[in-house]
Image (cartoon, rainbow, N blue to C red):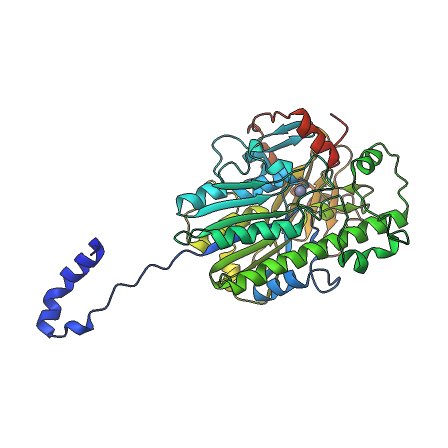
Length: 460
Ligand SMILES: [Zn+2]
């Protein structure tokens, strides 16, 4: 008999003997088992690809109907390494130190506490399934997972596709130890270039671009494409941009179907009523909205506006939240949701009240970064207003509900507002100015080739 039961019996025995009703003894309530956590990140997925309008993501939309869709969720950086680190630490890039720039990548700083460390000390088995260089252990972001299943290839074309990623997740869930809940970080890479969707998604979205006879399929994002793009040698016609965008859509739809297969299988395994599910992305992708392509280079919304859906036990279903929330808010939310102690150092704040159906409030968002150079762009989002301070040139001030495409710079028309937002941004940045980045990432010759094949070439 446990100590708890002994003391329980001791306290009540005199009373029960007096009442002569021993059959009324109740057992103390068993402690609720902790829920599982499934955190899905689709690399490079833009927020505007989610939802009914394009109908690319029926499975994720169904997940949203069961839970909460955050329509204005923001990343703190426009590329993978700092953004993933912000998610998994609830810290801004300067606070966690991971990022740097092309050729001078920096690890997560020593001593920074990560999500898997937090969930591991609460009794979870933590497991990550990831498909990109920046999530290898040496960059620091995934260093604390009990299990780290990493697949990266020298040739960016033959990555682990979504079907295989879902299979790996299901295999883990089917074999996971039942005495411990799991915390799984599941990363899909298909939406990132190379855009080369399989059937039937290619047929639906991009078949008209393929050569008749099928011997030559259209794809975009090979090493040759990326190097030609960075050298200014690609013929970037509107037709070319449209084609790249449709191929990208095919990858989004394919990944959605594979996430759907995972969620359906989890339901048949009885996991859906005790698993907290988060779906998001690390950053978006530009299709020449502001004169460039891919990601990593600006803090306009096509690169930092991310999808965010949360569903599971304790969530009021069917909510669509239009207030601004942040990547750093995800981890504190998961901690409160799973009743796991977080860190006092978290920059983010829990969204649990929103999940329960209570009032949502705008959060202010600091984003910055430029993986292509030493001068980062910065963005400060405060309600409807967004200030962008680019690496070079004048600041931009945008009214986001009237100009979501960030095409009308109101800086000269709103000098007072500009000054006030600049002061807030400067205060945030100067508070972090003394923080040091993590250590240098040492890359082998093979790892450099992988990064080049992903399009991260030049400027080194
Ligand atoms: Zn990424």
